[in-house]
Amino acid sequence: MRKLWEWLKSRIRGGSPSAAELRSRASKRLREGNINGAIRLLQQSLEMEPSNLEARVNLGVALYLQKRYSDALAHFQYVLGIDPNNSNALLNQAACYDALGQTDRAISILRQTALRFPNMPDVHYNLALALAKTGQWTEALDELKKELQSNPTHAHALRLLHQLRLRAKR
Image (cartoon, rainbow, N blue to C red; front, side, top):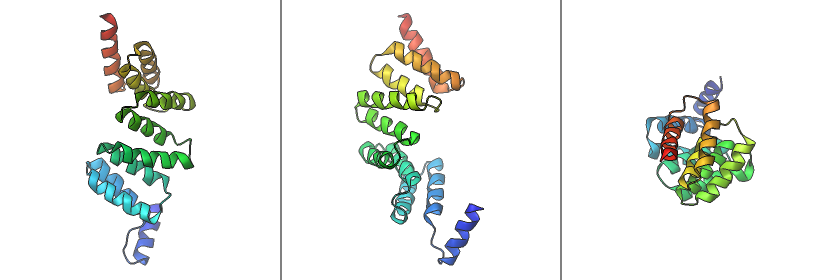
């Protein structure tokens, strides 16, 4: 129903797409791997609705995928300035800090996020990755076990668990 309403509004305006339509198209572009196209559409959407948090998070993700970590981080920080409980922005903010070489800062954010959102998919896995990167093997294993309790088929977590167990046997 919402899409129909957006479509009707766009026809009344003379065919130019709404911000919601642009976000929808951008999401499709991201799924297709067309990151540049997604960025262009998300930027257009934000020109129409500068404070739209969904568009900001998605633009941050697209920029992250292009390895533009500082640019991506700015969008996640914007979202967190308005909604400090936005779990997607928190997780992505930590990923940016890790990619920028600020792993300790990423770990701090991930620990806080895991405490606030213990059932959030990937939070324990991402924390385990960051902890393993800094040599905190026991804590990394504990976090992986938490991730696998809620998602026992998480392929990346299972692979990392196997790698850490092999490391512990040495």
